[in-house]
Image (cartoon, rainbow, N blue to C red; front, side, top):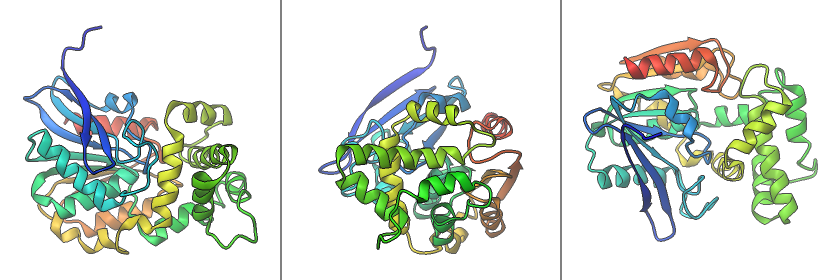
Length: 305
């Protein structure tokens, strides 16, 4: 079927070793959006396009360094939050876009907020789904037993892959195996990391559904990048986002968060909302996934209003 909207894609060299993959979909006369994927490391997918109306939106999708189609795959060299912020600036300049609406989910909210704090003059609005602040408390919740009460079986499966006598934290141990283990170990630890995350990101998910979802995206880059970023406190100063919200006062911000989100508890979205002067918070019935019916419906409504 012929697309009745403009489509452009390509690779953009952003450093000596990194090239990021991007696509632009939609109409030149439409509202311009930048879609910031989660993970880190998951990349964007065809499914992410369902939120937009390309007859009235112009949307930039891109895979962050080391993620999905970007090259080299799974590469952690020259890969920090600041590098990713700089890449967004290079991409916007390449596409000749001065100001943009930014939509990020999960880790994408962290990166969107850091980008907006550093480049407030380039941001028309922010849409944030499943707020992750990238602080020690949020990281500890996800990787140090914060989910155990609600997901004891899933937590036990994730934790037991790290020997009790290891001097490394859970993400450090997983990362070491992903980067330096045998090919079998690399695959196992990448798969187990992805399995853990998917198993707790949506209400009532079955093992069969988890396995199907893992096959749909580049789980190796997700696992490597998440373990790497979360082992390094996301490469941002502690409370960087909450300490710099005043810079965002003139930007309209919409926050959408699942009431039963186990990966990013709703209290963090409420905390961010309380610190902002120009925001609206929608707490919807659902977990962390953007495919939860109430969350998906709200995203589409906000984007199309």
